[in-house]
Image (cartoon, rainbow, N blue to C red; front, side):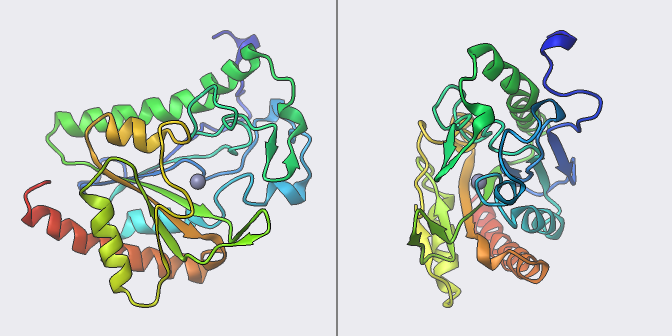
Length: 262
Ligand SMILES: [Zn+2]
């Protein structure tokens, strides 16, 4: 694309943010809603600063958990820095929620009346490079014979549309029959957690992108994990959850090796 139709300029950072590149863990972490940046060319999308720090713009708390978890396990993490209000990297492009005109109850003026060309520019600037990079990483791992267990990391708001959510953490999946049952078993064994089995959402081809496209279509063992945002809103919560998940994922890795599926 030429300069006139590029979304990002030299003032904007790359959407792709990586940690522990080339690490040898079987785990590959993704974080679609890691950041809440907005490209300079889009201003503030007409959204107030107080709304741009809410869950509608990003997955509160997950960045700290994802970074520490990937460090604990020495695992590659690929994260996306721009707000889901610009383009949601876990929605199929073209879906109504890909570039939302309303999120929960908040109108996003900068997304109203968007032309197909403008939507395409957002896709080219943010969505495509992020998913292209995930593809490249998976290709490279396959090429060097490194097993890949894909874990998509997310967080969810404790109250949505006035309804309180009881779960501390949820395992989100669709077709994988290997990792989600192990995750559920280990999380329930913790004893102090309310664990969601495909709660607060289930994964589907219509409402998700990373798990169906990179996990299922590539034939990888995979799951999504959602942590409730009030539990990871500060550094101590992020640290505790990263440590807990690292311990659980190490145990699961051992099981997968014993079963010779990785
Ligand atoms: Zn998310």
